[in-house]
Length: 107
Image 1 (cartoon, one colour):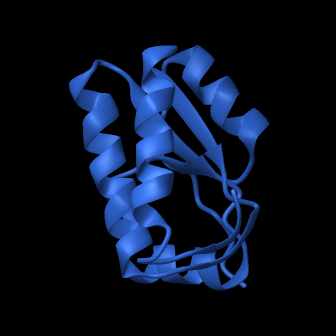
Image 2 (cartoon, rainbow, N blue to C red):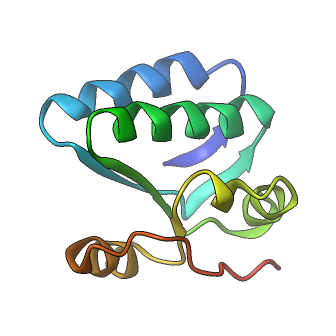
């Protein structure tokens, strides 16, 4: 993902990520290009995590930077959604069956 994630685009993004489940029960979202995420985006990630978990899968977020990482830390999003610093790190954790959040540096 890149750009800004806010109330105006959350429905479209959520629909697309839910649709991705038809091909897989696990999804990794690379957020390294995301410059902003408001509370609607944070809530969307929690809903999507529950959606994938109900299907026996997992939604993993990777690479949050700057203000996005700060917002995620402030609301403790990692308690509800696995977050990793990089996509390779997340994929390795998934292969090991250990998809728990790892600390993401906050600038």
